[in-house]
Amino acid sequence: MHSFIKPRKKKIIDDMSSLWIIFIILMSLGLIGFGVYINYKSSFYIKMLESDYLKQQSIEENVKSLRRDIQIFSMQKELETEVKQSNLVLKESVKSLFDLVPDQVTLTDVIMERDSLILKGYSASKESYSLLLEPPLKSIFDESHASFSIDNRGFYRFVSKNVMNINRGIVDE
Amino acid sequence: MGLFGSVKKRLTIQLIGICLEEDGCNIQVERFKNSKMTYSNRKSFLIESKEVLSKEIINYLNILQGEHEQTYVVLFLNTLGQGAIPGCDEGIYEKFGVDKNGIKSVCIDNRFTIYASLIDINWADKIFKKVGLDFIFSPFLILNAYIDKNNDTKEVKLYILNTNNGLTMMVKNGRKLLYASFFNVAKEQDLLLEDFENTETQSAVNLEEELFDEFDIDSDETNDDMQELDDEIDYENNSEYSSLSGKDLRFVKYLDASLKEFYDNDLYDSQFVTKVKIYDDAGMHKDVIKYIENDLLLDTSAENINLLNMVIEVAKEEVLSYA
Figure (tube, rainbow over the protein chains, first blue to last red):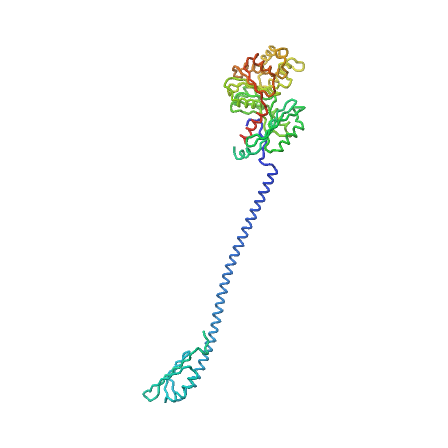
């Protein structure tokens, strides 16, 4: 420096411009701050939304499994009533079967299935079977066949196969 | 130059060079952008006193400063209380009888020291209080800038900066300063004619001492020489130079006295001066050159200059290099 005094300090920009620049800086800082705040808040809400969605999903699954359980229980209940009913039916049919059998016929085996009935027994004569037992059997079953054989004592041993064609009167599972 | 400097370079820099004289004030304004001049204007104002700036000047300067933030107000200091001495060591002040506490000094290129009295610097600060000042340049600095610019020879040469109210002289051997002095040629404080003749109110010795103190010349040693000089040349009655005005006459006398001082005073490394180079801002009389050539037998060359151009050029360098 070759001068006897030092120069006064100079501003690169005048007062008005510096005011503007300060204002713009403050504004942008405010905007950035606001943006950061919004970003933070939105990510917070997004997280909350995600967790809510997951919760909702688990609840939905829960509801589904509960519904399945309800279905299972109602089915079990239906099954139970069906079983009860079929037992009742069975009981009645056994009772009516024994009512059906005349005194001249003695049963040794009764194999009762859903749609068939196999009777094995003795009969004093073929006629007592075909007159007393066969007509009611034929009226109940669609098909009724009987085969005879004579045993040592002179009794007719018969095997009667009776088949019901369709699942008539029985509730499907 | 840092970031601030490179930004500054691209801004418009306005430099206002001011030269205050006894009855007028010259103001030159130049604006630079990217080191190129974009505006230049020169204006002169009349002033009543050198002690107070007129309202017109203050208004003019303040309006200019209001237009550009990067405005530097530069004052060319042409008061008597200043000088230049060879060397930059601590010991030079004592050697040349300069009161170190009463001055502000600047070392130039480690070659010589320019100084001005604190009174004068405070005076400048005071009258520019309403405007503000950035640089105060010594006339020696400006003269040296002219010398360095012209990259003159290595011979011993006397350089003179002739301004309207001041006479700045430097004797240099190449880049080395041998002698320097500054005189005010506008005022009628004529050491050789007036003061020595009119001794009614003040004794000649007192006045002489006062003036020599300001020039920092050892008055005891030069007293006799000056008296001799005064006796030898009767400038006013010399018909050959009767065309010279008071100012030019004083120019001649101070030049004479300075050369004598340079040769006779042991303080200076007196080498024989054969050439004179005058940088003339005041438009001096042709007879002055004639006188120097014929009577002092010095090879003289003169160049017309615009002082404030150089003041602004130096200020521009200062602004850009010290940003």
